Image (cartoon, rainbow, N blue to C red; front, side):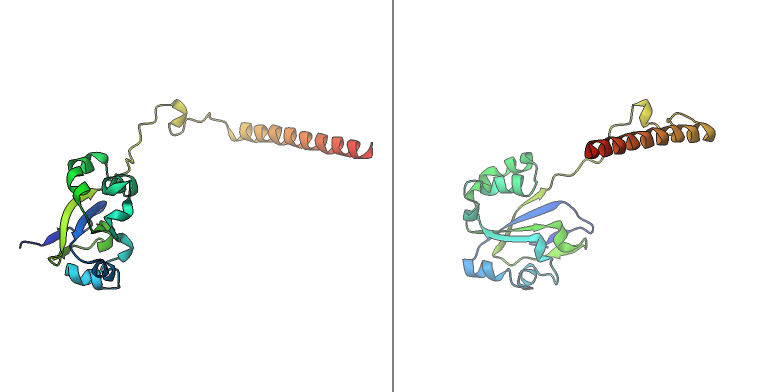
Length: 177
């Protein structure tokens, strides 16, 4: 089926860029509830994950800068399409994967809506290097018997009590003097 764009179930971190070949009034109308979903051939679309704007609004940053700096697309992906992105005029439509709420979706956009590119957002690397310090290993704290732990806690408590009492006595002496 030509013109059908398949969105797999559970897709995350993908941005699709569409060129809108329509007048400003028509592009503005797509922001109305249900209008964009209708021209894309679907029932529901989270409009918080959709952007419709004229390319001229981006001024100096341009579409390439907006995708890398504003949307978190890796620069290498955008560089491949730099010439095409700089040549775009009129209004564009950006749809993030979250707009489909994780559901498998088939878009059948109207003929005025053309897919120009699909870009992946930068993903966070959740892998941490392995812990190498001895103190980071489980159960590496010094072993104290319960009796030693209580004695240590008493010594710390007595020291804190002595310091507080000394400060209180010093405050009374300063105020009385």
